[in-house]
Amino acid sequence: MGAGKAVIVIGLVFLMAVYCATTVFAQSESTKGDSSQIQKSTYLGQKRPGVMPEQFLPHILLDGVHSAPTFSPDGSEMYWSRYYIPEGGKARVQHIFFSRYSDGRWSAPELAAFSGVYSDGGPFITDNGKRLIYYSNRPIEPGAEPGDEYLSDIWYIEMTDSGFGEPKRFPYNTEAHDGMASAAADGSIVFQSNRPGSYGIFDIYYSELIDGAYAKPKNLGTGVNCAGINFSPLIAPDKSFLIIAYNNNGADNGLHISFRKQDGGWTKPISMGERINSTSVQRFPGLSPDGRYLFFTRAGSERGVYWVETGIIDSLKREVLEQK
Image 1 (cartoon, rainbow, N blue to C red):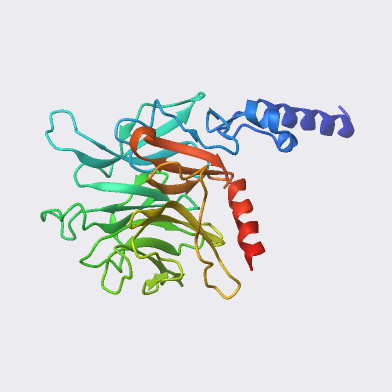
Image 2: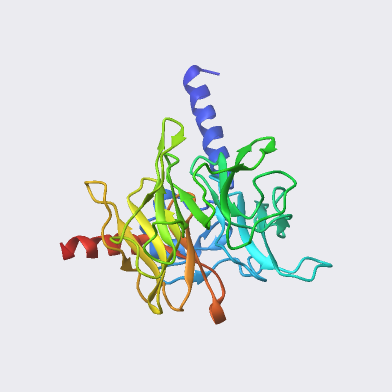
């Protein structure tokens, strides 16, 4: 066989392999501009949502679901927390569960290997997939009694091909409540806390990762925090925006978004609107691994996990810029 024919054959074999390969992210670049094709395609094993939020995997994420799912970078695993009464138990507890995507379907929920003893919630997998952050009332000293469920600390676990490492406590926890954390691509984190110095009932704090060490957390101030409860913050991987759940003393509740300014500060958060905030409690915002979809939870009669195109974030950013 001539060199030219060999190259052609190798090329055809490669193209056939690419064509036949299946992943959880099933949509080619060529159909991105065709909304009808996007609606017919699947993503994470589900029909893609559009500009209106739709419930995500209600047959998997049910029965006490508390946080929205966080995904491994390739979308093959997801983790979330739920409240439930364990078999043989008498009291409701919060633990972290996971599911794997294989052969076109998500597996039945299973208790995560590192959870099940203490009250654990709000898992977040970092952008590189190497660390899972969560909050827990796990005691600092092994074997000690766990703390109050509502006075949790932030913990993290290193994720490797061989499994989970030992849980480690975030260095700037306090005796107050610290929890519901998310991380940017560079490792810097945002979290909620009612530690001394907070303006509201809970405030959002930011800790930058510098040379492998976390800087002392900074309160984002009254420009970001309302006078009520500020909780379950999500920071964008590139730190360009911050989504916060508000419970502002009964008014202007729901998910709000703030954008990073050139000077490093943040714009005044604005409501993400009625499409997102249809009930009194929307929380636990999260992103799909490629950033195309926003996830969040709703409580009450609409309880469940919802997802929607992140184009709404771009629209809100234009609205903020037009107000300047």
